Length: 497
Figure (cartoon, rainbow, N blue to C red):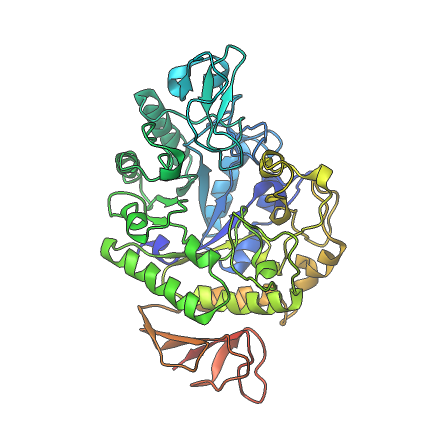
């Protein structure tokens, strides 16, 4: 079977993963030193957020050079060594590619090559060319000193590229080959739905998302990837409301997989989980693509925090920064959630730190916040810095964002060798997960209990009811200990029949 159909992929936000030179910023040296940690989790691949040269106006998603490495992180030679060292451990490397926009410090923009962006000439008025809004807040248009306007669906430092220009298309095809030639195993495509725009339509109609013309771009990209040995893959980032249109990106000649954000946003509710799982499997089945399950990433509130709130769902419209959270409940549910997630058919992504049970850091000093969402929202949306605080390893020096003192007991050193720790649970989950296969079949269960089987005799039970429940067999792994041979509330079990 194709490796990517059931892969466990570990997400590394490089700046906050591991610091190899003591300057407080994560880097390639730190990642290379910590590869055994990722291998010990049982990960099949690593996905790295952008490592390119960047002014870091948006955490590296404002790329100034797509064929090099940000000097703060290391060098291109070190990146090539990382790829080789990861491969030696049986770990593939997936890197981010950012095709919707680049940095305003990219040579194309600084040299004034306007046909490669979306520029509109000064019409003598003060109003922007249309009503499109930035996803970070405010207008999607900014004005240069000559009066002309340029489009940026994100920060003003991130001008959108013009994919109607064949030069742009050829450039990214060459960028793909540049990294494929160096051995990367795939690409996570940022804003995969956004490359093609329809300027005849208003903002309310989402004219910059999911336009039909984007699919030919990915068909050409797929042809390039298929030229290389070793099953090089694409995973798309698309926040789309229509599962049928979402699945169009996963046709056999386009992307291999895409993030399942409906699952990530789902509240802690048995009925809602089942709806999302059923809809996901139904949408993927006609195109023969594997679903991809994810609980957290670098853009969203960590799920230990989300699951401890009264409202356990996630929405960008309201991150609930001020909402109270019961961390013990959130942690208990997070332990159960990884058994649910890893037991489902398809691939699974783990965001760095979730294997340590880390929570969202919501009390960062405002003067240290760097996320453009914080600034463009008029300091009302505290943004994403809280899920990007550097990991605790146990021998930590300075860090670019301060770690909570309580994280010391969550460090890798503190949890290593503790059979009851979150780290131990993740290691067990991904060790056993390799033996699970087959399609999903729901099993009749009590109200607010989810139970499903896979073809190989594996059963997963998730108890979201108010009390303990009996199990259909003796479990080989549980998220919390059984009480009087029953599974407590907010717990999950894996059983082999």
